[in-house]
Amino acid sequence: MKNRLKVLRAERDWTQADLAERLDVSRQTINAIEKGKFDPSLPLAFKASRLFGLTIEEIFQDD
Image 1 (tube, one colour):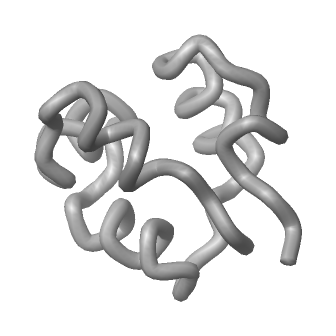
Image 2: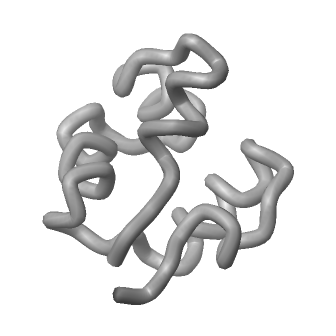
């Protein structure tokens, strides 16, 4: 699954650890999602959506 997490995070000058803390997951989870090795759970996708003020579809795109 493609996503815009890295770009959105960089726009805010957040590290992976910063984003992980805000989403209550590990930095490794953020790294895996950004690299497309792991798809977020639906609750995590909703959390990211609320955090960035975007729809889930604006952050995550199905391949």
